[in-house]
Length: 270
Image 1 (tube, rainbow, N blue to C red):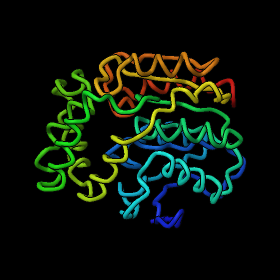
Image 2 (cartoon, one colour; image 1 turned 135 degrees about the vertical axis):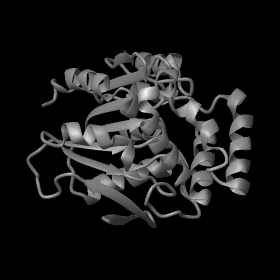
Image 3 (tube, one colour; image 1 turned 30 degrees about the horizontal axis):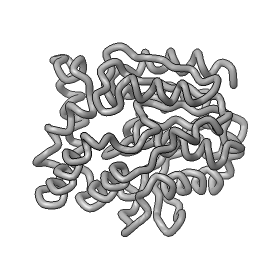
Image 4 (cartoon, one colour; image 1 turned 90 degrees about the vertical axis):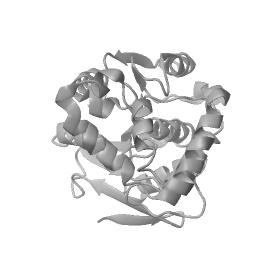
């Protein structure tokens, strides 16, 4: 299990082709309560042409549960340090939800590391005040009863109705429910708290010069179209795409549609 100690945290990562210095690099940052598995479909699709690197944020997946460091700026610093530790000069950074919060900050802090930025199902705003009470209830529930007692209530936030009501995808539903249940209680709570308390970066996005693609599912209830549109309008020259039939986890729900949109965008850089 490859790990790197970064900013006093043991960070787990997977590298599809660690000895290849010729391929362009794609770095994947997952959403809250997931891990490297969120991008299984994308790595399978892109690994022949890209060196695909994905990692678990601290407190999630197989990375260390640290006492602190769950704010978005520290997580961005973790991502930057990982890229540098692996000797990556340039990469396409793909971030979903929380990974997108981090991706925006990486683009602001270190544009020299990026060829392109792909933001999936994410926001540049602080957490919606109307949702904070619900998130605080989630934190309390995680602390006292763990993920298994609440994971079925989280699934409709993570996935759209097309996925949730498709009987042919019952096995997929069970697989992702199992992934939710596998979260470390303390790690999940600290990571969620970091997301809730994040600062807005919308007023800094005008500084992003990296070619950017913003993608949102038309069934995303966590970060709906309006959030994606705000990012698109704020980053000059960015592209915006809507994936039909996808909720907040487009990498799982509609991977083929996602890849077509990404391919069209990436043709400019490879």
